[in-house]
Length: 272
Image (cartoon, rainbow, N blue to C red; front, side, top):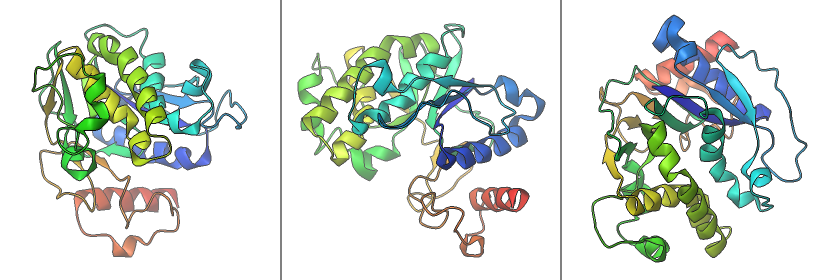
């Protein structure tokens, strides 16, 4: 399995990738270079200058990739959420069709090696904590996706994200996931729904192609759920203690004593 954490060529993403890389080598050792590809988007907003390379002291393979804005001639920043998929698509073209991809944002890192279920050709593994947290795609927000669904069979969407799937399965759903995401963002501009648009797009594309989403509950979200031994990865997007929006102005003395925070503290000490 190859993990693909989407970054953007800004200092804000530099430290996130440094943390990902630090932990990735701890988990995978010398094999880490075969277990990740880092796509770095050349710009995040249409007004940003295009960056053709970065000086981030990267030891993992990386590739500079085009922004979805430049790929699809878009201008609204609300569409940059699609970079997670468009960046992964650009760096995965030479991979074997049966290679497993783990497609994630930059603000995640591994707690351990993935040892969970690997999906079949007609499945994707996700973490569906997002469904009850905020997406509610099978509940209150079903109306957001309803017109984009192409059949009435149930059991394919579960509101999940943090995708693990075969490269050929990704290729099957990629276009529709991005297309639906863009449509939903335009239908609900500058709202929470536009921020979650790619999550909606993934769920719709899986439904329409009858790709079953398997919830492995394999991710720890500080401040949202409890850490446990089943989780192989952590996502700190909304953590008020290790607050990515305030870093490096965070106080490790306030961190709880668990594996996630201990890793973060160790990394902070190693890079200070």
